[in-house]
Image (tube, rainbow, N blue to C red):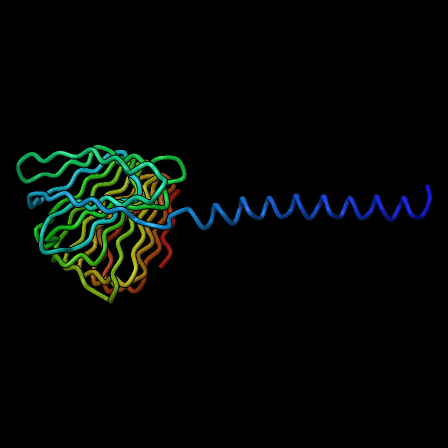
Length: 227
């Protein structure tokens, strides 16, 4: 092949590569620019509740507020999350939260006067409890991921958590006077200060904790406690 032809072929190949690369970049950059550019909020007023039952729900955050309200967040161009809920007496049931494709980075926020909250039961869920202001709380988890977090270091007087069927518990900036844990095939990571730890774990459960003043905790040989 003549030198001129080689140069021409190389030049044409380079131009083609630049055009293709530019088109790919436009598609990728355009996707990043158009996704999540605007949030659309829908607020649903609720009655105050003492008991919360959550099923088949992801990306749910529970936060303190002066009034009970369910805030649904979605983004322009995405299918709005669908929340199935009902209230019976003092109990709020969240029977499912469904997101559209590519929508799992969005959230549903449940706001309420959390001083009134006494019990949370969750199955097949992924949720967080933010800045819980109450003195006592009971939590029952089944195949659920639970994040108990606080903006500033806070203390709960009595906290009881039961986790079964590969449930997982995390906490941050949290101290507990009396923590009672029952873990079965589940894990917990609670790095704060605990005055008294009670409960048990079995069936390959794991527990990682911070400072403990008193402990009355049982485990079988398959489970591990990391102080």
